Image 1 (spheres, helix red, strand yellow):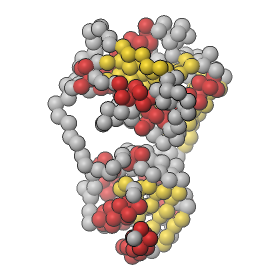
Image 2: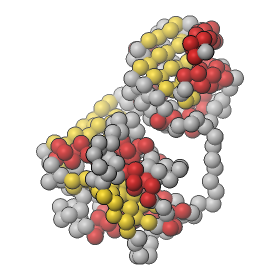
Image 3: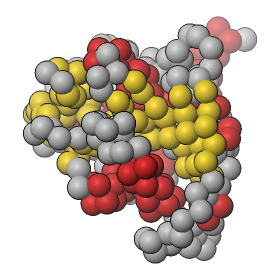
Image 4: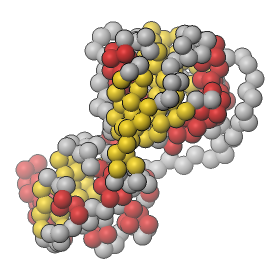
Length: 332
């Protein structure tokens, strides 16, 4: 029997972050394969909404209320509260989890690192796939900028796995919502609290780029920030989001929040329309799992031609407006 825990992260609206829904789906499948149980844990100043969301994926959720999470960095608070829950449960093999899973985002990576120190557990990071074999998780990871795929497992002990966004498609349990257990810890924190002195809200697409079904992305071939006007127009008519390569972000043409790739966001849309993107490996690792990839590039030998489903060889400033005109006529 294997007991798995999923750490649920809160989204900007207080609900469950999409990556946590993906991780919960994966954990449920692993628990089925292992013949074990799975529990979700949500820590926050007001965890009720996210906990209710997580309960649609998992049979049991523990909601930990810590008011300091409202104005302090979340990772240290979550790590300490979760480590205490593991200890209260008796530790791995005695009622506690044998494996903890969390999304491989900025907060998830911070929590995983802190939990590793607090619990003395190993960590396998940025998993692109996880299976249950021989009594434990076997983790597939993309390394060296996506050039190699490795398979690793924990050496006979409990561990922590961070799961890459888009590795799994989120699916609810399909049954009744799980039970929610609310906890308000009284123990004073041992780790220092890091105060949040400012929050910056950025206007963007209706849905986060990681959740977009359609992404129109631009690269160095756009020539400058004005080129993203065409990208935005195409995204608007398709009902999608705007993405970009690191080169475009570094040039100051678009904000970092739209960057896709090894040092940006990992996305898995149904359609990825790439305009003026060469397809370097650093960008490829962020979007290669898209269901359909369409590229517009003047160079027929650009690396993106090797993995795109359709390549249009031509000037994007001629092809793009033609696509926009055709789409606009259909929507009209």
